[in-house]
Length: 366
Image 1: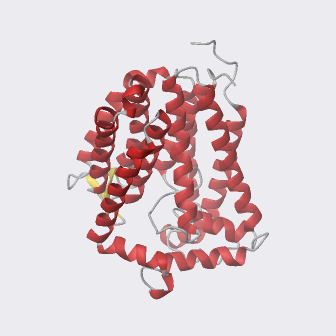
Image 2: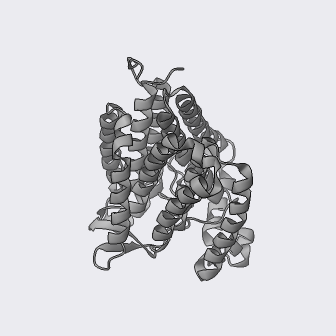
């Protein structure tokens, strides 16, 4: 192991804190009216987001100082714990139902979402497996099939909740890692066809998912039903123009766009800060991606490289899906925007993941 660098990647830390600061500001702006109406406290969501951010930052700095090779040792244990939690969350009386999905474990408003932590556990385990069995991954039977079988088992358990968005991010991240490890494109092509058929079956099997697809193709066919969120999101994007309506001046947050502080916070940001504000946030995510790839390329071993690729791939996929949904380019999936959307499990997981990436950066050669 090379000698440790004097400090972690400063640019990565700076981009993370800028995104986090913008996120807290936008959570308050998007939710002040909702918080006042529901809880008689305009700062209700903002205060909780700051609490989650504080916990996440503490986790990030703590994990940043843990040698990333530790996760290689504990990868299998973490995966087993997350599988157990995915079983427990389905037990009536333990798992909490929110938005039609039994995805939460906890007491009252303070709870965790096991499927979120499964994403990081799967990344850690796959990084270990791919580092130790990279040559096998070119074999369809000995490498690719067993690896994808594990990923799809986790996906199936997440779908029992159901939570298609989180499951899709986990599968997408896993595929990126497997592809980078050297899996053959021809194998992916065949499995891709099967995957698309399976995805189509999942959509057809649930009427609400089918409505989301049809509303994505033509939201105005059901403007007060399945197409409502997309239409209201587009109504937020349009008036924003180049410079926006001004911070706190959004119109769509006043009961038009449901839960504007969560999945559709990018729409409120674009409405208030305009095209320039939206591009600045996307630029920060681009910097995050750039530094993550540099860290992966400079990692001193395969485990560190695959772990970094998995983490930055997870962030990138979530950003692409969330922004795609907000701009009407993808069906509504219920995916949060990393570091910006309101949510404890998602925010804590992302900051903890950045902590792992920062530790790898202390050993990377770049």
